[in-house]
Image 1: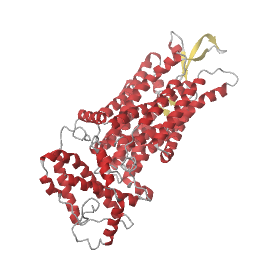
Image 2 (image 1 turned 120 degrees about the vertical axis):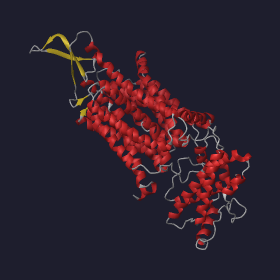
Image 3 (image 1 turned 180 degrees about the horizontal axis):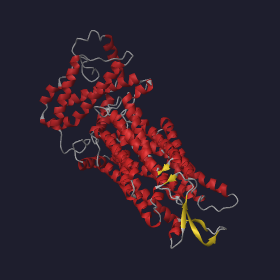
Image 4 (image 1 turned 30 degrees about the vertical axis):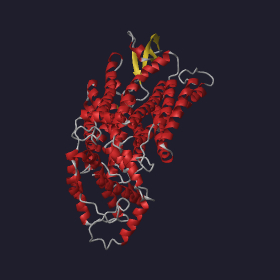
Length: 640
């Protein structure tokens, strides 16, 4: 428990777990499709054939033959516990279009939500409310499916479910980066993606005994959504604010406040003034004389930045009155950064105060009063000098959706590094989904036991995400991505020499099937970890305010392309060419373009997400960061 206490408090861990349960529960959007739309086996009457009891003899046939002309048919199922929507409402032959309409609207719900997630920036402070309302509405709609007597009424129910799924997937990882510390933020995708297949296995076990489609939608999905809604409300913080990261430097802060700002120059200024030994000496002197200085007025610790160590910071409320109008632009660019530095500095001081070692910094009451005045002055200064036409600031809660969308596009387009990373991320995310959907297509054609197929696929998902967690600890994300895409690409291309769907029955048939499935199995076990690694790597290549746009846009492109993959599969079958060859070529292409990612590093060479404090050197990390924050604050005050 002490280890968890270092990561976050109890309420924060509970919120993290609840959001993880919702993430895993959303996996039922896909897991339920083979069950609630299960289609039985058709048997057509064999003309003129009767048994000894003068009963009509039936033989297996497909649905098209059963629905043609006046052929008599009957249906049978190998799973008597399953009662699907298609079976209850007799969605066969002429009524099959109703099932097609339901499935189409499910896909339309996801597309709609991803369009909304791409076009509308959801402010971090509003994301938690979206989770609450989305859970509540989805749970109510799914519970209402218990009373459905007309299949057309399922269209709005499943549309709402898929819409909430897409919206949740668009903002959940951005929410993790905004409101959870570095440990939970970094390993959150690994934990959530591992919980996803666990819930899918539980669903398979549930439907093995309770296969009625109403039970799937109400008991396994609808009621849990309502329960999780109550837990979200119970653990909702009274003042939800983006977390102040302990080791996040001013370069990443400048990305958050001004993505197109001159962050490289600020990083160079900080690096020149970064002298931890000087601060250590100051801290030792202050600790030795803290009893004598308790009643003295606060003095600045900026020995490395000012002519003398006893120089005090002037009251900014006085200095801001003397700012010439010609410097308003400079103030506007730096005030928001300075406020963030001061807030982080206060957090670091509290952490140092509670440390059990001898590293403590205690400011007298006068310093807190001075800091309060400084915050008030900066707030007034920021409001008076803010430019309403600035498009490089983070979208605020009171801006319109169209303004947010334009700000996002402009900030990404005008920054070459951001634009390149977003485009490559979309292409990589598409490659992951193509690899995943390609396996689903061939698994569907192979037939077999439905529970075995789903369980087989889910086990590989679990192992892939489990392995991704350890790989992220040991290796750089970019290296993991390149190796994984290369393995998937080579495995799919090797399917050109084995076709599992065109093996002739005879001697060695079973061995041929096994050999032909080996490349698919290798690819299946490899590409499952790509989602987790990509979600984690996004913390390095883009600031958090662009994560929602990247996820939503990537999923939007992927859904559209995956809807076209069945047509691609059909064309390749007409040309008698293996469909996996195209999947493999795209994965090799993705392997090639990954090298063009540009990581956003701190000034000391660490990626942005490496902002959590290690137990061994946490005290020293806080000490170093405090010195850099104070140095930057001094430099900005001088500039002002």
